[in-house]
Length: 289
Length: 148
Ligand SMILES: C[S@@+](CC[C@H](N)C(=O)[O-])C[C@H]1O[C@@H](n2cnc3c(N)ncnc32)[C@H](O)[C@@H]1O
Image 1 (cartoon, helix red, strand yellow):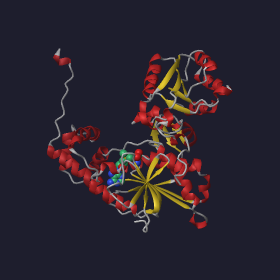
Image 2: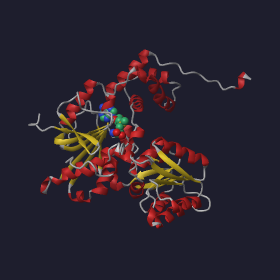
Image 3: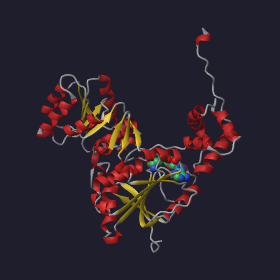
Image 4: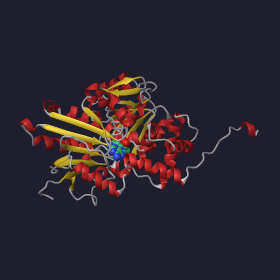
């Protein structure tokens, strides 16, 4: 009887030293802070990486990483651990506020050679956020075709940037938050996946960038979406990143954060403003400081 | 700039939106699917009426126009979901009724066809609670308080 039950080998638990190694690797590469409660998460996310590399277990994978110079496998491991959850028009309300108030207000004040709009999606994951903005611009602001409109999107994860650039999404991904009308208008079905049209893909420039480390040369930004990114950093890193990105914003420029994030008690040079039911953080002008 | 907080479906204040209970008509021939949808909708305070086929749905809607949304399966016995959508859109009393197709049909052409016939939104099975709530939000139905 017993012999017929498949042998289940319980995975060897990750030791404290191994977890510390992974934690500092992730921190070093992305600034994302992992606490001890993330042991299970690390295990679950590293398992497919180990399998893919033909390594027997997560513990063996970590041993391998520890004993080899930094390379592709380290990058893969880090990128697998970092949370990349996202969706089209995530939370809706901030995007509605952008469409109904923020963008019209920015556009109203600009004429002639002033007619430019620059938007940056930082920590863009698989691209749903910048593409949501791109589709919205196409859909609601046809006037922008005569403007200088620039849409940048960045992420620390090379894997996510590749996914973003390809603009290919599973059925589950297009089922989340994407209005059906936009799906029909801006996507093509390819087998079981959906690909966003070149017209929209070409609106976005993707950049590999670590918010906590790399210098980025961008034109001054009107709207910066950095949603659900700060939440993974420790307080010191949050402050440093806010200080850096503020310098990219035009005076009065709008920062969009995730619903659980704020600049309050971190950086007093942002002003919290309500727009409809959404909250934005405006970079204060020199005088207002 | 923030002078008018009341633009668009998302601008309503939380207490404003709950003044009258919302009602949904769920049209699906699968009892299991109806009960899943009922569960999700009830959790955001909807009163749910069920119809097991297209004919029954049309009958209900011919006397009762007081729905905030109808969820329509595609493959229904007797009258197909697409026909139901077409008929609803023909009735001036139901012109403003938001229609959400909930279906296993996942072909691009099907989605386009449903929208063309007058559906407002489209969700492909399988879906989860979050996805359904996202679709309701797109249709301007307040789901925020319940989601949190
Ligand atoms: C949870 S996703 C958020 C995606 C999207 N902004 C949204 O709100 O739906 C967080 C993203 O931030 C990226 N990220 C983490 N640390 C980063 C860093 N130091 N610099 C840039 N991106 C980072 C991750 O790779 C991931 O794609």
